[in-house]
Length: 334
Image 1 (cartoon, helix red, strand yellow):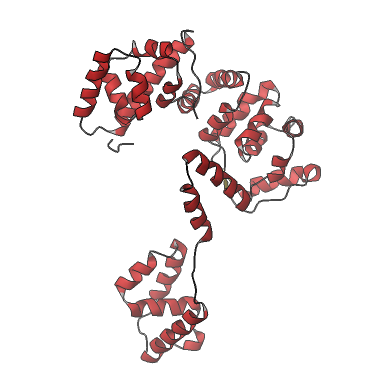
Image 2 (cartoon, rainbow, N blue to C red):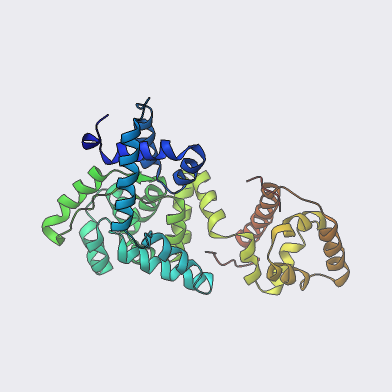
């Protein structure tokens, strides 16, 4: 072993071996998986460390420490943690989106600068899969406006395809960018991006106007009933019932037994509970409160299943024209 031929990884491996297992395990907590893999592979090749090499490695470390004295930080992570504590969840989410948008490049980002009608005109002759991919890369508000300007007959197909998208390779995005480059001057993104999926679809539909979301869902239901049901689940949740008027909520509660309602309220917000109690008799409300206080730990999956059952009752009443719903945004114990 010759000190002059040691690489940075070699020196790190020697240093950590000399420091011992306990110190090394603590240092590993601060390293990335890739850094740990590189160091441990080098460690595996070492079976003897001469005394003079050990001394030189420690001396080199001490010298480097002086040269690089100061504070090392992961700026992006620090900023994200600070933003997450900046007031309300709504404000933190808005600030986080602004931060990410300003620091991370987005594929097809020039489209975000174009008027929705112009983008729709550019895409209307493209294959629905291409439309879906492009809309998946855009912010929800912009994508929903583009979707609204696309031909009515392709909207549901595009939404369906967005729901099926998960990750997209850089090669696919690059091909699309190259195809559009001459018209809008797009610059290629070099990273793989997480796009599409059901959450993206729910956000898009929530921003649709003039009952377009209902029309699109009905069309998707003809192709894939399970997907349509899953989208509806995510669009309207049990907590969204808090926004209903008293009459509508009372109609729903008539269809639900006290035992079922008690289970559903196990993980509900205080606001949701009070809204429920305000729309039932004092006696029934007191009984449910007592049952909730006496109820032991319950699997969250059971609670969510019961909440979804009540949501389905609400949707059935809406289909019957009796109420009007708005749209909303595991096995652990609760």
